[in-house]
Image (cartoon, rainbow, N blue to C red; front, side):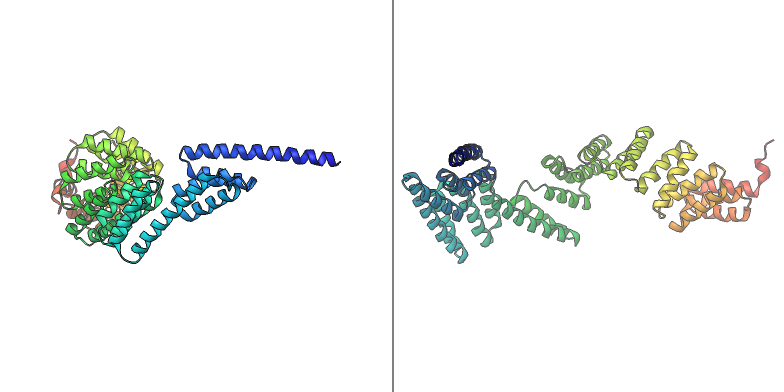
Length: 435
């Protein structure tokens, strides 16, 4: 029995050693490949299995130094020395660490004491003497510059720190804080109509961080507000060049091309908006509007249907689709689409007018009359609605009401000729009798 217990303990010891050796080897490989968080997990697992694994503690100190955590670095080195007192490399690293910690503490005292110039000089010395701490030294130099109201210079140090160590999050957060403040200030000025002030802040954002694509987008919007569409194109192009997945940027670029009459590039930009965000119904509708204008009703119809699939509550898509059906005299389809559009948004006066036109064409005069009145509820001076109301009244045999409606329609120059023709038909029916 005693022999069995000893064998069991012996086997467990062998298995534990094998397990910790494998964990350590995996951790070391991860550390060498730059996967610090994953390496840390492996080394921590090793010391959990074997608390006396000095080399695992030593590599943990290397991980923490690469993360610029001097306290954890010191703690892990002490553990390494505790479990391997004869190892001179561990002791040399501990002495080196103490000197680094002392230099950093001295620099931080100057920084926190308000002596930004003194702090910057000391961080520069840290970078010179301890190259492994370069990223941290650059970051804290940036903080010192920021506290001295030198945001532009601070941003350069933050970017250099990130360039030196892409995994170091602190400079990234600090740079984002700087740029976000300037960006938000620019947006506030833009909303207040202070375009000159807003432009100044958006340009400041780009000085702080040239990769801040949202600032280019806002500059493009500002240019559009000022009517400078050529400059808007430049800024929107920079936006999508920096972030090809920014659907809103592609949409704005497409609108600007459209304003400039460049429909081919407008359609390409809108297609890119949909590629970036397949649920972007607004881009699909805008694309369809251009296609309608070009007379490509078949492709436009497809784009509208795609927009409706993406967003079944998009009233404008139904209204425009109804307009296509009206132009093709597909009255049943038109009535269906326009009824949905007006159910979703009762203020769509043009959709109500087109619905009245479809129902008049289908002989449904009562519903045509109701639709025309709904159009006039939405817009009281809308001549096309008065015209269709007149047509519905004629259909229903209400000549007096029809004349009143046509008289209102003829006040609009565009509808005068049609309205006068219908008035003459009512007043002089004999002229229109078939011979």
